[in-house]
Image (cartoon, rainbow, N blue to C red):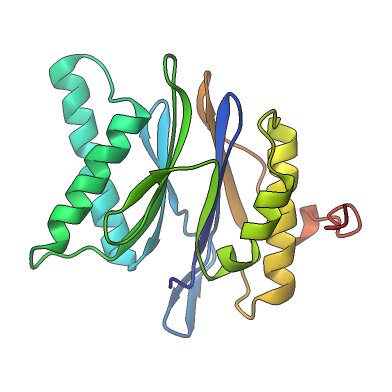
Length: 210
């Protein structure tokens, strides 16, 4: 399981991704400004964890191929088609000498299909899901996401749930994951929201009590 953590949550008309910005090698802390969320198109994005080189190379490979598809056909793939394309390429690479050690959350919005969040593991298995996470920190977030997620979730409520997850990770995980990037994609496209860090957390408000 990766030292990094990424989280995703889907609402009725949006998908939100959050990732901590730590880059580490084994037990060595390298830097604290490494974004793990990447733009694939105007209405899709991907968050990755795994080997640093693999995540960058594989994400770049997928992004360039999606852009080539847009040039050749005049339109972007839908989030669901993008997830299947990504999953198939990752599964194919497992059977070669170029095996990518990458796990992903792929988020997107389509005017016809609506919002979509896909969980893709390092073996190429994919599943459309309402909320998910990868990495050590996600161990503490499954129950929080399950308890507070709702079909009529607003973006403000989604940010509040992510803050609850971050607060729990910072309280219980020995790894210091202090700064988090947050992105959302909806009918207006992909954009970055205010980062989550210790200064933005009000631990009294973030109580997990019912």
